[in-house]
Length: 149
Figure 1 (tube, rainbow, N blue to C red):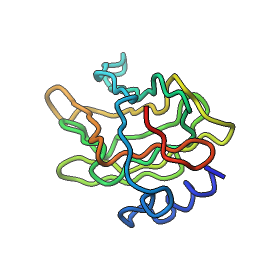
Figure 2 (figure 1 turned 90 degrees about the vertical axis):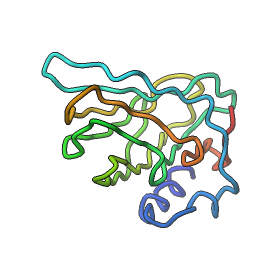
Figure 3 (figure 1 turned 45 degrees about the vertical axis):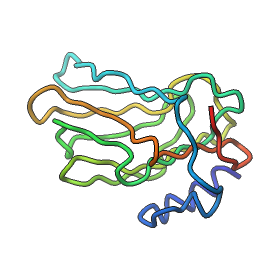
């Protein structure tokens, strides 16, 4: 069911508040962590987004427009992929400032701890930075309920 509702949000990802209409108000996401960008041997960069200590687990994540903010990142190279069974069902990027909107789901159940997303990209100059705006990120469990840490 989480896959179905998150998929519907993916189709309408440009509509603000999609998850608000499905699940209610936004949640606190203090259980999400974003690693410091690490440079790879090919010159690219990687960032991991993980969940930690989520007793109910998460099966879906929506990062609304402006929720993922990237500085010194060449947007043409930014790519998100799921980790730990998560699938990225939609992603869109803005040019300035560098922002991404995406939806990811885990159709095989919820995860309480572990990686959720992997972001790869090239730097546009200087040290890249990736951050999440907690007011623009919504997590859902496998029962389509808002999850709070």
